[in-house]
Image (tube, rainbow, N blue to C red; front, side, top):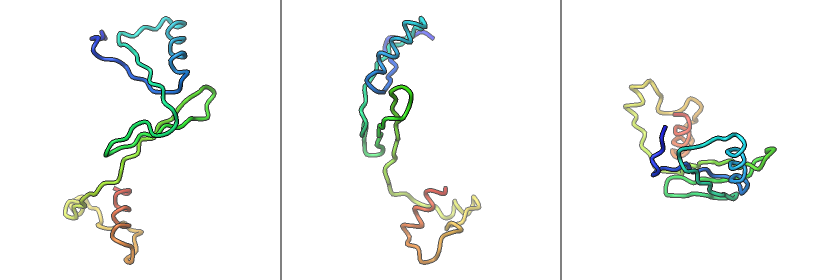
Length: 113
């Protein structure tokens, strides 16, 4: 596939990633029609907006490596009882007890469905 020159490949990782990729290209004679931009990341929050947070952490690996966790922030939702009934779903999980708070039951439903 031919690159247009207007797109690039963004790769995120530890400080040595750029040198590693350069060595891979040099010794394997690999070429890309897209420019590659390496973004150095450090452990901690690397991105956050109103919906998601991306957290970087070092991994125990034979070479320096990072892992990333994408966390969706809590948001209010709506449980459509009629739609659930049409799908054959119960309004409450089988293991939910009557004295549980409405918020707790809502959280159980979000995880289950």
